[in-house]
Amino acid sequence: MDLERELEQLRNSLLQAERIQTELDRRVYYMKTLYDVSKDIFGSVEYETILKNFLLMTMGNFGVAEGFILTVDVPSREINGFVSIGFQADDISLLRTGGSEILFSDDLVKSMQNEADLKTCGLLPSAMLCAFSFNVDTDCTGIMGMGAKLIGEPYNTDDEELLDTLVNNLVVALKNARSFEEIKGLNLDLQEKNIQLETALNQLQASMRKVEILESIKENLSKFVPITVSRMIEKSPTNAIPESKKQDLSVLFLDIEGYTKLCEKFGSSETSEIIEKHFSAFMDAIYANNGDVNETAGDGLMVLFLDEDKKTNALEAARTALMIRKETVRIYEQCDSLCYRPLDINMGINSGEALVGATKFETYSGSRWTYTARGNLTNVAARIGAQATRGGIYLSKSTAERVKGHFSPKSKGKFKLKNVSEEIEIYEL
Image (tube, rainbow, N blue to C red):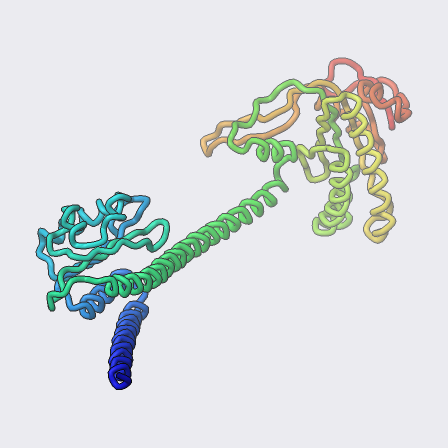
């Protein structure tokens, strides 16, 4: 009795050991299969290569002759990956259309468990006995299917467990591949952006060079163009220069007394240096009071003061004249070797209405524009200046009336001026 019991226990122990060994063998097989498949699919970052290697290894381990994997882009519903082995052309077309339809039908995806389900579905070739759906990410889903085992055995729960583990590894590999493709795409975009940026930078540099050239041209031309004209062009570069119109202004004429004698005494080179030194200082005084040098001659200037306020343009002209007188003395004191006495800068100012603006002259060689003030006002201003001597600043009555609240001009009496019909009362500042 004891012997029989011991034999029974021994048989049970042997059966248990056999079951344990079988389970160990199965697990070793699964681990080896998982290792082999993972080695192949994780050795590449190319999407199609991963699908192909995975299908080959899985079919080889399960011993089947037909298999396929299909993945689709969820937002566009377009196939973005497909590999198949062992199918004819007609079956391949059915795999693509049927596989896509299954993936976008929740009911069908959930029912794809066994051979009976697949046959009932009727969307895949009849050779398909096993199918698994999977999600790579929210934008990509897929399905894998295999035919019958060559040894004739059906798929069991162990096979399903192994396939589930293998497919999970496939998903990880496909995620890596998609991430790699995304990074590669971003790198290409970055390279394109860099090219665009480099092109834009080159264009900007070229534009800046053009601006520098234009600024240089502007700077050089501004030496020959009245400030008023420069401002008009800057304000509206594409518009035509406005025509002349009547405008209130004050006109200052400036003349160096004894210019001819100065040239005879010092020669043209030294005289030019003297005039340049004085006129440079005069320009500062003119611009400080919003004056616009309209015309220059060897020994004289015509300056316009165009402020819309009558008193303001007259005051600016008067202040300019006084500053010029002061600058003349300063230059003499600093450079007393140039002249035996300060230069006499005679000036005449007249205020009132004149025709101000651009005038066009048509010639055979082309058009020429001038910007100036024309009319009796400017003629009288020039004649008044011609009456001044020894650095005098002479004003017309209209100018004197405008500035008398700030200065005390004294009447010099009435004068008969050249080409002026009536006598003009002149004041000295």
